[in-house]
Length: 248
Image (cartoon, rainbow, N blue to C red):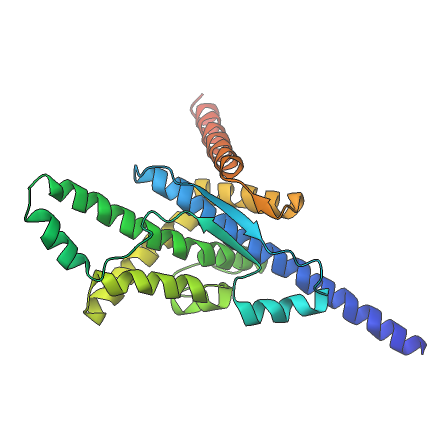
C-alpha cells in the first residue's frame, strides 16, 4: 500500500514536470510567432496587423491527459489568431502577376509589395517552431544550428500545422516542386536567422515568460506589441551603454 502511494506520487510528480516543460515549449512557440508577426513585419516595413494569442481552456482536462491531447490535436492548446497579411491565396502567383502588370507599370510596385507580404507570412509561420527548438536546445545546453534543426525537424517542435500552411502558400507560388523547395529553404534560413538574433531572442524570451507567468487565456495585440517593442528598446540601450563603457 505504502509502495503504491509512493509510486503514484512519483508518477504524478513526473507528469507535472512534463506538463510544466510542455507549457514552456508552447509559450516559446507562440511567442516566436508573435515576435515574427510584429518585429519581422516591422523590419520589412509592412503595415501593422491585428493578432492575439489564445490558449484553450484546459481546466477540465487532467494533467496526465494534456500531453496526449496535444499529440492528437497538434498545436490546438494555443494558437495565434490573425496575423496573416494574406488571408486569401491566389491559385497562381504567376497568373496574378501577369494579370496585374499587363494593365499598368504602376502595378509592379503592388506586385512587389504582395511578394514581400507573401514571404513574411511564411517566415512568421516558421519562426514559431524554430523558437521552440531554440528554447529546447538552450535548455539542454545543445547547439542550435541549421544542420541539427532543419525543416524536417520542425515537426518535433509543434511545427506540423505551420509547415502545412507554409506549403499551402508555396503551392500558389509555383507548380514546380524544386522551385517550391528552394523558396522554402530560402525562407527557412531567414526565419532561423531571425530567431538566432540576440535582440529578437531577448524579445521572444520576455514574451514567453510573460505568457507563463500571467496565465491568461487571451493576450491581446496591444499588450504583445508593447512588450516586444519595450524589450527591443531595452536590449539596444543596454548594448549602446556597453559600447560607450568599452570606448570610454
